[in-house]
Length: 572
Ligand code: GDP
Image (cartoon, rainbow, N blue to C red; front, side, top):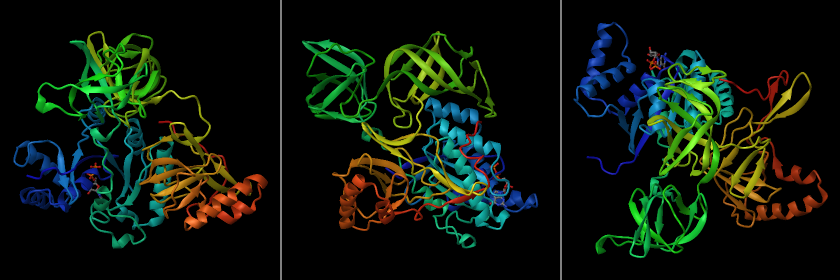
């Protein structure tokens, strides 16, 4: 028995025949997760059919074995590396996958999106990209497979990478890596391919070990929904289950949505041996608080420095299973942890047929087994989190009459239209242009900057580190000379935002908010930069940026014939 090994769930998606089964078969084979029997059987079948050994058949053999209960008793595919165990979330059909993901039956933490290098990006590849965005899967590698069929060409790989990246970025999916592979020949899977010496990244098996595991339930911010309040002696005991995070006696808490602030007085216990000062998810507990407000079921307790979102209008993605179609302006009940509230669909923004993934324009209703992007209005304010930040308080069900008819995940608040991208940490906001693209327009003879789709990046969000005209390293800091704030990017995620005063130069690249590199190598340089910044602000000379900023380190300017194609949004 392997105990306490980390388990990581991955889903593999891609257009049919682009190589999903072959990639999975190879991963199982190369990590020795298959029995000799299965391999022998595939060899025999291949020989009988007069065909070369197909890794894709391994998958069938493996699944067959599992069905017969020979190996393990789950239907999931598993393999392991030295670091951890992997479970490949089966996506036999999009419908099941979407339903399972939205309802919480499955949880893919990361995705491999496979594209055939020769066939290039197909409509299905784009739809799969859209699904990742719909489900808020942020950890994505794109595998450009069958590189052997395009003679391992770096140029063609780059062309696919640029096209797919532009498309995915528009959907706010920012792949962490693009890996050129030939699953059939095992190139760039377990070892670095000599045939693609131009590729400087890791082979697939090394790269998947680099996916960062989500924080465990206990490490997330405290979310303690109230189930009931009991009167006991003279005390009012608040009971419920801690969904995420932990709390201890003396902690300052806020009870939302009314945002009453108080302190934890006691954690109740039945027997002396259960006495504790600290409890954590997923424990069911009873507590008392210092101020006896009128607390009730449905309210959510959080630490005051990190409370949930509170709103009565929000955006969500829904999987609908109801007998009757989901329609606008009808009363439904929405249940989210212990909250139950009347709601209605304010708008149906997009409907997707879950079997074909085709988009249905102008849908007036969401039919059984459709997926939809909707805006929901609740009768009173409720507390929740975005699904990508908290999968428990970001998920709800919709009840139609007496039947649970749909499941949904919250994608965010309804924001007024924004014109600029920002890095954001509560009140700290930095307007950024480092994800804009620069093009030299041949027909006009000038350089133009193309703005990315405006987006707010919050702490923990993956940022687009690869663009058409830039490529940033996984770790860097972004200096905003307007607000005097510095954003820290670690492992391609927004890690923190600090003030100049609180900043410690640590040797990693420093960029300005346009993505230009600061010529700073040490603490002394950084202090000098800050010093000169003050005088530059007074006179506004070009000398200052010319001295300190280097455009070309991570950026380049690409040629475009005309500027017509800039800023095009793809509509599925
Ligand atoms: P799926 O439908 O996405 O699961 O695709 P499969 O894994 O079944 O692969 C479809 C076909 O492409 C099979 O005949 C594979 O042998 C072939 N194939 C997969 N990977 C490669 C590759 O790297 N190079 C070449 N030349 N063929 C491949």
